[in-house]
Length: 261
Image 1 (cartoon, rainbow, N blue to C red):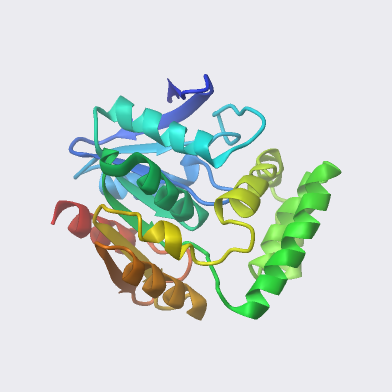
Image 2 (image 1 turned 90 degrees about the vertical axis):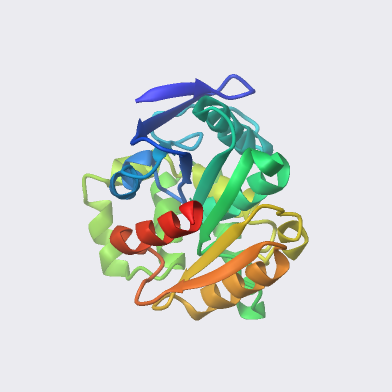
């Protein structure tokens, strides 16, 4: 594990593996760099892979108040550490952060790949999102971190019995520890109502691969299609048979083809 110091003085922990052009992995909600280790291993024969703990997670520190700009600065610090422009891949809400970084950092990101940024323009989805955000805010304000994690799992469709089993698992304390970062992803990075950010997407000037899973939620395809149409250099790809968490041996070749092609 190594650290880089972000612009506001916050230490950001990361692992580096492999040799080749720099590729930075941006994780989604409740995910740390440890969860990216398998994907890193698949990519390391072709890239110098940087997997990092986003601020407030794992071994990275945090600062208050939170701002999306600070997370973009974290990514910028990693790009500088990598020696200049880098490839960036973001998964889920990490893809939304990577999109914003591409707008702010311009050509410091050579190419961008995104997998299932969870924006949703459907009206019924906006109502569910509003209710989720309200309950999440209340749980975190009361420091009910376990309830916040369970609420997120319920929102994404995990059965109640599976959530209860997770509460009893050794992994639960780690999830509770990073529960406050749910607010970062869901009340800041994804915007006030989780709509597809067309006005930001049109400002992404670098080549961008927008992916969805063929076995995932139908709205993920609609979101990916909307983003790919809005981005000047966007291309859409569906990974057949994959859900919201794609298999690394399917995702890695798609990333390798896009970044090195």
